[in-house]
Image (cartoon, rainbow, N blue to C red; front, top):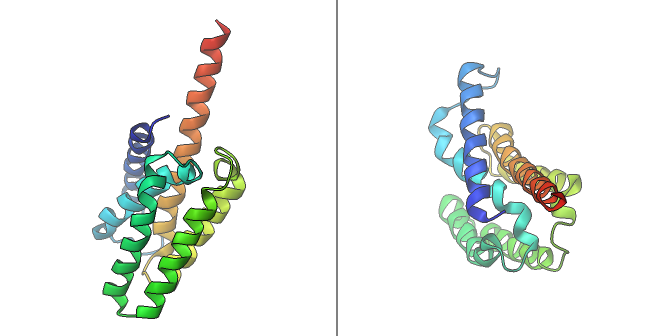
Length: 162
């Protein structure tokens, strides 16, 4: 599936999750002013499994995105070393992911678990008020990618059988 399809499915999942949170509020305080961040994280999650594909849009933009993320962290925290370390770690992660086989670990449960854990740790360490909610949007985006790939692959297999 192309990146535009993954973004579309990710956006649909975002809308469903926001609706659920609106209709059934959690015990934890949910601030709907964070919706733009939730959307960005959900869409990022919907593209993340393709970081292992050297020709994917997210992989091509991930190096610039890593540097941009470091700059944003610096602006928000004014911690030079923290921003530099995070930037270097992001660049290293992107480089290492490019060495993996496409649709390998990133398209299975271990990749999902690692992504979700890293996302939660990052938002927890940055002292966000609701790191669980933000992580939930990233996880839903990631799962939307896996689901969309599964469905599109199944449809191709059925079409080839006919």
